[in-house]
Length: 252
Image (cartoon, rainbow, N blue to C red; front, side, top):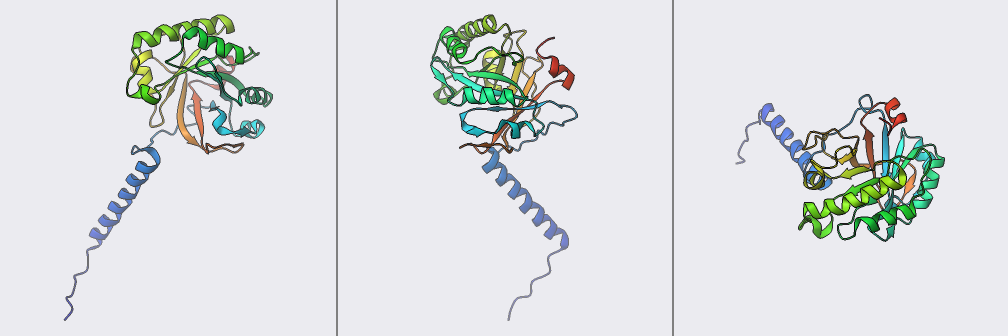
């Protein structure tokens, strides 16, 4: 004789379904976002000025198509360390400017090269251009430096040399880009007067030392039309100000 099972109460069914949905969401977060849900979604009303940052990984870029997607600016990778130039930089630089976007160039800071030689590398690659955004120095821990971060005093010594050379050459104080960990380790409490471009792909950033940020990289998983490279995603950023303030930037 088969055993009769009692009907499961509707509440229990709903509870099981809710638990299953939560488990699916957590699993998706783990595989897509490294286990942390991304809660940031900057409103266009609060942050009307949006832009991208690109490198060789976005491949061939149709800048006119990109510019049509409510994009106001682009930061383009130019150089890295003392001897590397992004192979797509010159093409991106010219075509982005022709599209009507405001453009700036960025340098990926190396912990293994001197500040002077890194400045020379950037200056060789990036000709001053009317209306260009300030040069950017990207400071982030990479590779084995994540496990063995260089000393703060060693980094700031070379970084300061680089920043001084760039400001002298371009007549603009550079912007400092940093991940949260690099900011806390090397920039917090330092470099007063330098604009900060901070990366936080999870929530609205609040800097350790209480200073305001100027640019915010809020996602590295945007998808836009207009590029075909090995990287299917593109970084998106906002400017901390109005359209009018951005038009006058970097003038204070």
